[in-house]
Image 1: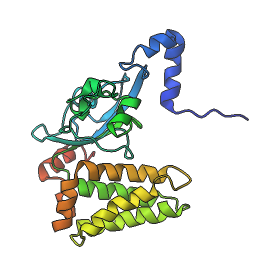
Image 2 (image 1 turned 90 degrees about the vertical axis):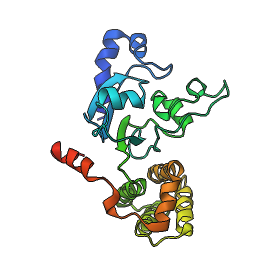
Image 3 (image 1 turned 30 degrees about the vertical axis):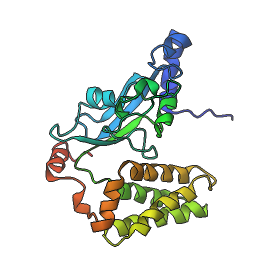
Length: 257
């Protein structure tokens, strides 16, 4: 029998569309072309992790501060946000949009923080990332980005089905390189390879898994180059990931991370 498979979010919007009509539903969104509402997830170093329904086009700052309740430890600074699932390139609150050209899609947000750009498909594409699942992972200043990257790449290496050589070999090679870097046994050549390998994976496999591996890795290196260079110089062991204050806060929430 013919089967229609949709995710729960899609199915949940149908009653509202029928009741309100398409124009009224679209008007709930804040950005032209991104209408209606979406389910946003927020996890990591936030006080109220969860899934929230909100208009399409809210900003990451709103998601973190208004819905997520701000940082888990208010004494810490926000360092980075993966905006829409692990394959979406990371954003930084201290990076500002450079779009002085009035014809640029981000011109309206020129000199604003990346976190203040509305979460919309085309705007995030212009920002160099993706909207993805709208499920953000929030990291405060206690996170070492090299170790966070290694943890993420371990997941992708494990999940690769192994059918395509660039993905099968590339994910393993990336993890080996990061293990060398974090152990303090790497040189600048390994850091160069950490850029070359994912670039050679993209567009060379049957499915998009390799691209989904390469994009967040390249995004991490692009946004935090100094941390990767420092790791090459002296290594970054596991113990640098979180300080004890943050660990105790997580333990106070029943170990939820």
